[in-house]
Image (cartoon, rainbow, N blue to C red; front, side, top):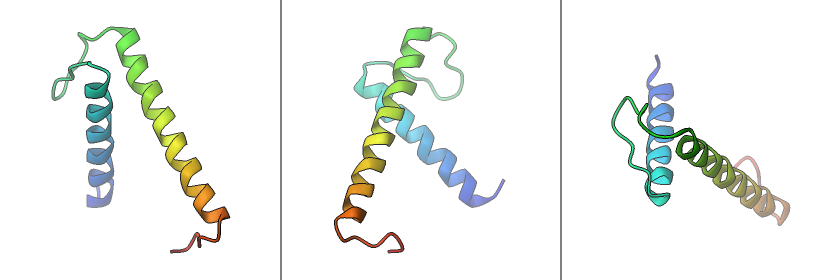
Length: 70
């Protein structure tokens, strides 16, 4: 695995841990089979919600005179 994909994977793991913490779900390093399907779904759903908000925010700034190639 390249160092770029390792850093991306680590960033996603950190993001997941941050979201889980904000939802009050304790994640372990590695296996997390002890959390409920509802908790896992809440984490994934919140991650998607935040990623969409981030993308929309960036698209709005590009539409307001920003340059996509910056």
